[in-house]
Image (tube, rainbow, N blue to C red; front, side):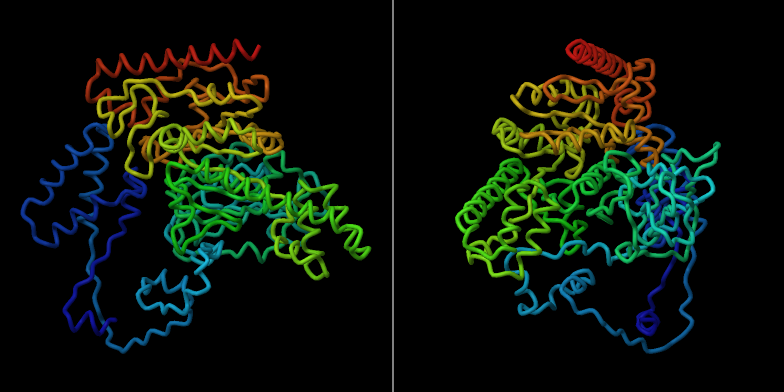
Length: 593
């Protein structure tokens, strides 16, 4: 490679763009830094002044601080650009060891994959958990655990968008501290630094001890990547507590979601609570892109992606398919129970008595695999374990394009569950307004603020017979979110959880590092409400302090931008939004009494 660079007289330069962006409160935003350097290297006259004007025009509605930060970062980049000297000549032989299909795609050598290697994928299935091996090593800023300040709450684990932080409990961890609540165990927080995006959400939510946090963000050039599957960990606590859920192994890890993503912690929590019982039908959108972009698969459970518009129906089809196959299994078992060996008969009886218990039915399947059972039952053996089907997608799907199907599924009275990752905007396709977008929010197709109120999906769903409904915001109350997931799963019938999800499209001025705190503020000021409906209405959040409403709106560019564009219009629309929030709270407060 070096020989080629010298022979072709290619110059190489380096710039620590990530660090410059972070110092200027532009974490992860390096486009203007790179743009000015390219123009400078191309000897474009007046490149700096041209870019300054471009920045002022592009970011005018985002606030003066963002404009100034970009200009400062641009000038700092110019003064820190360094040329790399090619000093040694040698022949470099690249030895490719891993010729697997997954690795070849990752190395952009897909055009060299022979058809013979693709035969294993002809059925449409792809291996899970491939992201475990990627170790992208993309951030030099990673969290460090300070054990003497740790209270073992587990909040950092639940808040981590990429499952990089893990709570570990075992008897032999040399780095651990005594496990609170179980003698003989050691507790530790372990961090796979090579998988970390450096978002800092974990450190942001850490309560610490005596004013000192147990996690701090530090700069590291040499980082470790941890194989958590090789680390023994036990969980002596129920999956109804923060610490109990945090100790469960997530079956969704190292996705390609944005740093600080507000959606992924909900999915990760769902996998921690339900484990291998879970089957996911995913609507197209952000969650399908970070959930299954070949060959990166963050899931260790069955997952399938439908179209944007029909995910609810897709999930219902999977559910009915499972149901019919298990009904057939039940019929076969009842028909043959008296003609099989005694040990098989005992397993059949155990299955009939516990057909909806995943752990028991999974154990029955494993014990039947090596036994002489009816051929038709053997063909259906993968359907012996009980499963639960969850449809997952964003508000563009649930409120807009897929709403008709969602309404149909919720009215089916089938035992199917739905998780709406509500960012209040079409996040994946560029920030277009949806029916979930709030009045006055600036988005694509609502350049001067959306003129209609947000659709109340909670109210609509709670009018459907036998439908469980919950509204959650993880950063505001983790226990309420855990309670909602457990109740939705236990409910005999359809259930829907609406999860408030901060997104980079919101333009949180303090950055996605504080996305969890923004969820908390959203609830405190009355922007969103924590509540559940199980035949009765339950408000789980405190009486809102509407005096904080303006603070919440001012911290997000999607609302603040309208004030810059048209102050009078902003005052009118955002004040109406606040009044709507007050009226909505009073409505639910009244019917929950």
